[in-house]
Image (cartoon, rainbow, N blue to C red; front, side, top):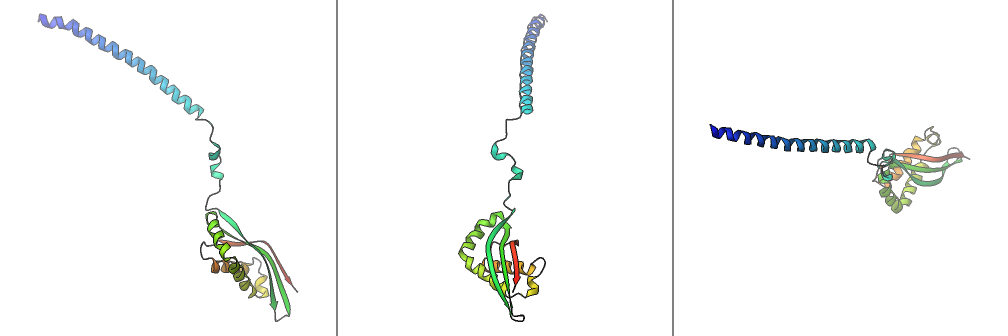
Length: 171
């Protein structure tokens, strides 16, 4: 038994030393932890600086699927009316609407086939009667323009046809 009692004071001293080391490390770790938490809170509170210019108002930037206008140009068309011996003159400036991402392919096709597009539109409209040209929403004229465009340029498809101005005279 005497051997056990001689080891007891050494064991107790060893345990005290180990506890002191852990307490010192623990207090140091607690201080470091507090510093880390304080730095994280400060960065969160202040933010990471100003948003770069290219990312401001990203929601307001145009999307590729947003509609865009493509100008078809001005048209002056005369339509003889045999039954009344009169002539109808149409003067309008038309455009088509298609998704913004399709403007470039449409422009390339239009540049190649512009004369066919214009000729198709003119031929379609010259077949109209006076009553078709007097429609309130000009639906027949819009359809004729859409048909003239789609006959010459199959892809990309257009969504709608609009007018910058439209004038109808009969003499």
